[in-house]
Length: 384
Ligand SMILES: Nc1ncnc2c1ncn2[C@@H]1O[C@H](COP(=O)(O)OP(=O)(O)OP(=O)(O)O)[C@@H](O)[C@H]1O
Ligand SMILES: CC(=O)N[C@H]1[C@@H]2OC[C@@H](O2)[C@@H](O)[C@@H]1O[C@H](C)C(=O)O
Image 1 (cartoon, rainbow, N blue to C red):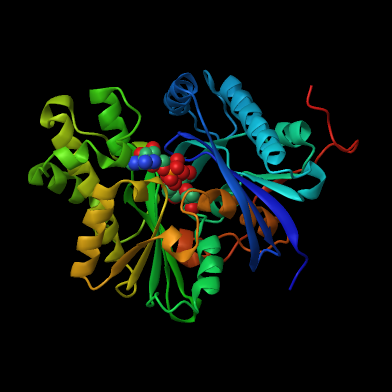
Image 2 (cartoon, helix red, strand yellow):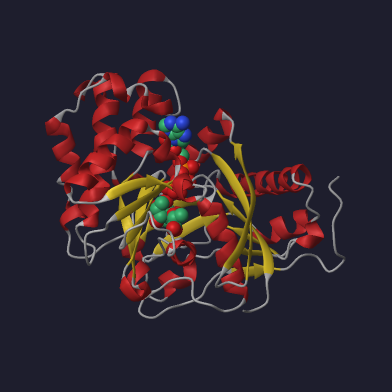
């Protein structure tokens, strides 16, 4: 076993709902301990600023450009991450000097894999100065520079978790991890640790945008709105016949690749119901491109908290002899898994281990990645 490091991962995902923080102890291969985790939600005003940031990012053609509001937003986003770290460490009685590295995802504001362009805002150097901890950030860029899609990156961590689960009797192989965040992605672990992963379709973003526009709320909590509606077959078919599902090659998704229905296409309830179905059916449809049909689907991400999505997923998976389990049923944490992954990947980056593989992002050969921002030489900064 290599040198054991303690890493804290920070994730601000495509749902733009807040910052997830989690701790892992790892040598970059084996995850020895998963520590405490926490979520720090963004307030509505900051979410609106992030949404404006996505608009401003549309004009970027070089990844270090920061047009419009983006420079200010990057700074404020980073300061919010620093605050999240401080609160997390204090609440969990962890001293900053006991953390070897922070894995910092930042916020994706633009993702155009066909143009080899992916932009995550987040200032690693500022975060290192603010926290007094080394930071590994910008972990998608090197994959793209080597011909990969730049996403998904979590599969290496899923593979490490799967190694720890292999003895569990309730799991039949092959296993697939499904992350239902803003966008959904899946990681298939086949015989001999074969790793195949890709984005699988819209996750919660369409539902979130729909209920925000029609009910002024950020998401359909507990699927309550969807459970009052009916699936509109024609609308569902329109989403599920998108060329994304039938294309020869798997590609990673940008938040704006799928757009919500227009206002008069459905009632609030029928829209939410149909989009929940689309989320589930997109996963199963994308799973058709896997080498063999999965027997166990392990569900992570916020979408697992929507029972309407989970019921649809279960019945669609059962029809193909698969079984759906939430991450918690296996002792995993479906909310903090991405943050854990970013901590794990930061340690892999420090040790030069690959973050991505031909089977996960389409990169030509396994590559490492990430940039290191070292903590200030004069050790810990005060927080004033
Ligand atoms: N209790 C709940 N009931 C229904 N849906 C929920 C619940 N809690 C969270 N969600 C959904 O999950 C979303 C957040 O999921 P998650 O935090 O996994 O996304 P993310 O990390 O931002 O996305 P990505 O994985 O695409 O980067 C919310 O926007 C919401 O739609
Ligand atoms: C470009 C980008 O930020 N992509 C995200 C997004 O959210 C889910 C899906 O699309 C996945 O490809 C990725 O995040 C996960 C955590 C990943 O890279 O593994």
